[in-house]
Amino acid sequence: MLPVKGICMEMCPKEETIMRKSKKLVHQLECDPHKMVKCFSRSAAGNLLSKPHILRPPSVLKNTISYLLNEILTITNIPFSIIYDFIDDRLNSIKQDATIQELSNQEWMAILPPIIRFHAFAAYKCYEYDVNTFDPFLNLKHFHESIFKIVRIFLEDSDESTDELCFEMVSLLIVTNLGDYNVLQQALPFITKKSTLIKKAVLLSLSIMNGNFGHLFEIYNTLPAIHQCVISVQLPMLRRNILKSMCMGFNCKNNYFAISILTKILLHNKVQETIKECQHYRLTVNGDKVELSKSLFNNEVDEVKQIRIILIVVTSEKRDQIQC
Image (cartoon, rainbow, N blue to C red; front, side):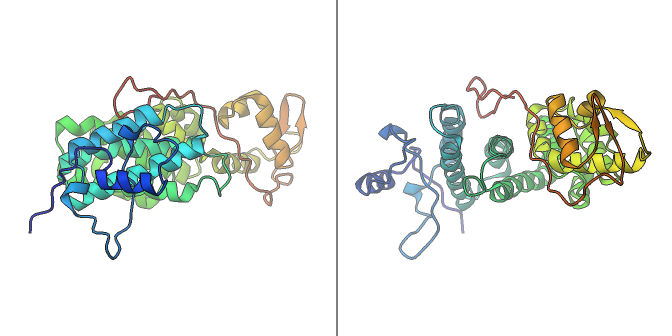
């Protein structure tokens, strides 16, 4: 049986537009009635999702993604948590339409990358939000669903024309899961490719896995900003491990280490953050130096929730991209 093909040429089917207007379910980001976007909905009795007139074909799905990321994501006078919830729901609806229509691998490769970049960006942007405002685990789940799918597609159907996209997505998957052996296994088919980006990601992940944190500072600063975003949200855990490891390795009474150098190693934004972190783990700070001692290091306290500042400009200059 052939898959159903969508014929809805609007971002939101007319029957949904009429229904939501009548029930006052129009979102505050849909103030323009001509730019409403189809909501995500679950299949239920009396709610058939495979009707052609409510399904958007690939071209409309791509245009809808462009609208969401180029126009909605750039709004600055509304809290980002509201913008995130809106875009996340509408992107789920886009993936739902694509799945029902059983899009080809090439069509999926045009749809998934901007969705993946959005979730990577959101993980960084919403890091300090309360869990009731932003669910990082659900966002990561949506990220993984999309990126694992596109990685499978690269294994099945890829050529030189998609190499750059493949390198970006595979390396992004690796650095989102630093030190994860299972993810590295899935990346094995791509390691032989002549990609500096993948090689850097693999080297960094292996280094973290083996407790060799020296490569973090070196590699981090050479990666694209979207990669830095997903690494940044892992920094609190990594910093704790780095400090603990250094306290073990440099352990010696009155052995002091320069705060300025430690700030670079820990990828802190400024010296004051490094001092605060050292004091948080009960390490003795003496002027511009800190005593690294395993007997002083407090392993019982929580991580310091401080991420690295990344200059990110969300712009519509390049379609379907979050500019970093």
